[in-house]
Every structure is written in structure tokens, then in C-alpha cells.
Image (cartoon, rainbow, N blue to C red; front, side, top):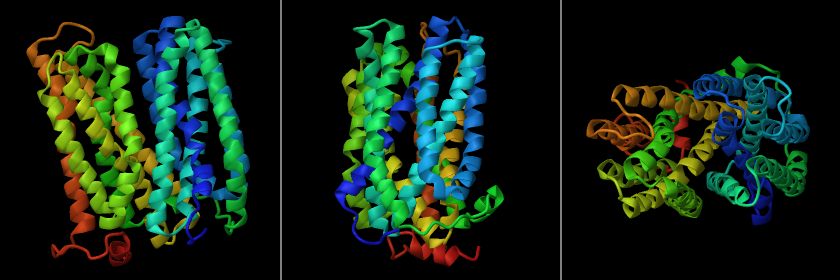
Length: 440
């Protein structure tokens, strides 16, 4: 751990591993289901059931992965290295082999891949959280790491269509997985020297493996923060579940889906330095609230769009993407402040696993609520829908998420900006609130 200024070179060497991790995350739940439906004839109903089970498995295992990562912190390099190899191998097997029934093979490969993915992302986040106690430096760390993650995601979104222009679908996925392996190897060339130096300079205590001890170390303010984060992520996950329907069935612009997503993610990556400066000046909680209000002010206009409103939606993607930058950079940085202030460094990975759990449960909840409600409203994907069904789609896609986001902003302001007497905290960072709530 260091409290001195963090050099830009070290920051890049740490953050670069987020590129292949995010690159691998995209095909797991986006490309793979379509591939198994078209190439292997697996029904969409069966894929939906399997994916729901896998998502729940993925979310529930995260706290256990966090507790084990805390226990085996001394072997972090080996754990992350083995997870990287397993992730690449599982991705390759997913698209390039079928030794057993397609549904079983799909389940085995996805379960293996998401476990390795969780091990990598939880440990990478925990390493960043343990790097320094300086809250400003923490935002630099999370900002660049999440920006690198968005770069990996942008490449993963763009690459399949490029590969399919030159190769068959099967070969395109082969090369996609080989590119993943190459990116992972290159990232490790940069990341390993940072990791070796970081481990050498950090006291390596080995807490006993105890999931309940890790969960019990989470103070009340941290639990409240995780609840706010979960509500905010539910507001963000609902449009993510419905975005394809909105673009194709309401805007009538299916061919521009990739462009809209690129605008959104590129804007998020470009906005990371902005949110670092805003949080340094006004504090992380205020900066996060500003981003939530920006998200609402820009995204609520999607509720009023109709067929052909393409450029208006592109503007919405840009401004809501800017707000995305804060959603990615600030919560992990805030959690790092909680961990250091609460003296729970021994269970850092467990608490970052809880952050991942909140995000994954929000996505599962968004799917479980939004899709059945649209079905009840009479909406049918890729079909001619009446005004009432399209109204329900607009409300579910834009209006309800904005209300949820406003609720998250109000909750955050109530708990972490204003005291019970209604006085604004002088300290823009976390420390004053946690000290006042440490006994709770």
C-alpha cells in the first residue's frame, strides 16, 4: 500500500488487464446464445432457462470467490494467472468444440468462463482498492481501470462484424477467441511487473477463510452504500435489457444498433477524467449525484421518441454515456474509502465481490421484471406492435429507470450528503460519515 503519488506508468500497467477481462465479458451473454441457437439449434426457451440459472450461479458465487481471494491473497499472481488461462480456454471451447450435448456443453463452458471472469475482476478491483488510502488517487485508479474496461468492450462489440466480413461465422469466433488470448498475454506482460512490485511492497497477512467474517466486516454505511448502488444499477440495467427492442421495434433503426452502443461506451470512457476532476472538487458522493441527475435529464427524453428519431437518440446516447463514466468510476472508489476507513482491508476482495453481486442481481432482477411486464402489455419483439405496447416499451425503457435513478440520488443525498439534522457535511469525502456511523 502507498500514500505517495501514483505514477502514470504504474497506473497503466495495473489498468491494462481490464481490457481483455471486459473483452471476454461481452460474448458470454450476448454472442454465445445466438451462436448456439443458430449453429446448434438450441431453442430460445431452453437458452433462457439456462442463462437465468447461470446468472444466478454467477452472482451467488461472488462472495465465496471474494472470501477465498482474501484467504489466498499471498498467491494472488498464481490465482489470477490460472484464472486467465481458464477464461481463454473456456471461451475457445465454447465456440470451438461440442464433445457432449450442446446445452450441457454451453452450461459447462459458460459456468467455467464466468467463474474465471469473476476471479479476475474481483481480484483486480481489490488490488486497486488496496493500493492507496488517498481518495483522490483511488478515483484515478478506478477511472483508468474502468476506461480500459470500456475500451475492451468497444473492441469486443465491433470485432465480430468485422471478422464475419472476411470469414465464416465459425472461423470468426475462432479468431475472436485467439485475439482474446493474445490480448490477455500482452496485458499480463505489462501487469505482472506491477503486481510483483505491489505484492512486494504490501504486507501480506493471511486471514482465515470465513465468508461470514467478510460479510460481518461490512459496516452499516457500507451496506447502505451497496443498497444505493444496487438501486442505481437496477435503473441502468433495465434499459440494457430492453435496448435492442427499443432501437429495432420503436425507432426502426436496427442497422444503427452498433453505432448507438459505440457512442454510449466511447462517451463513458471519454468522461472519466471529467468525473475525476468533479469528484476532487465536490466530493465523490456529490459527483455521483450530479451524474445521476445528468443521466435522468438526458435519458428521460427517450420516452418521447418515436420511429425515425435517430439523431435525437444519438444525442441521448452521448450524454447518458457521459453519466455512465461516473457510474463506473466512482462506486468502486467510494467502496475503497469505506474499506480503509473501516479498517477491513483483510476482507477487501469480499467487499468488492458484494459490489459485483449487487450489479449482477440488479441485471437479473431487471430481466425478471421488465420482460414479463412487456409481455403482459402485449409487446412482441420483431413484430408489428400497437401504440399501447410501444408506450409500455418506452415507459419501461426510459421513464421507470429515470424514476429509479432519482430515488437512488435522493437516497444517496439523504444518507451521505445531509446529516440527520439536515446539515450538509463539510467533508466532501467519506470519512466524516463513517466515523459518525462506526458504532451503528
